[in-house]
Image (cartoon, rainbow, N blue to C red; front, side):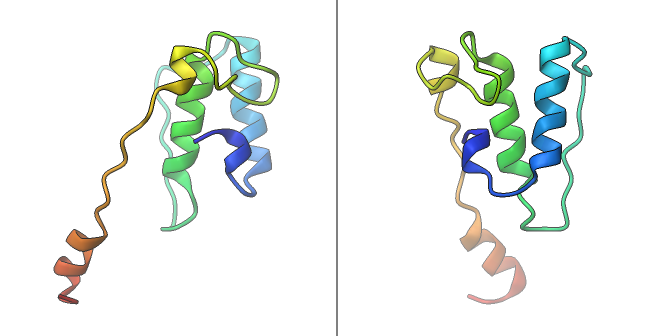
Length: 87
């Protein structure tokens, strides 16, 4: 997941980029959402951007080992359906 893959959230993405450019990155950040707003993909894109050794002004390079690291996101949809009694 890269910033370019996230639709919307332009103001948030720019603030995250700005903190990286200025070198003032908080030691911890909390990404919250109302469900389906994209906080988790945004957090993954930000982690990739922070760790990229050859990032551009807008996104991770996609070529360095840090950028190509594949985040494994488990599919929990079946677990959620069981919790809700849908299966």
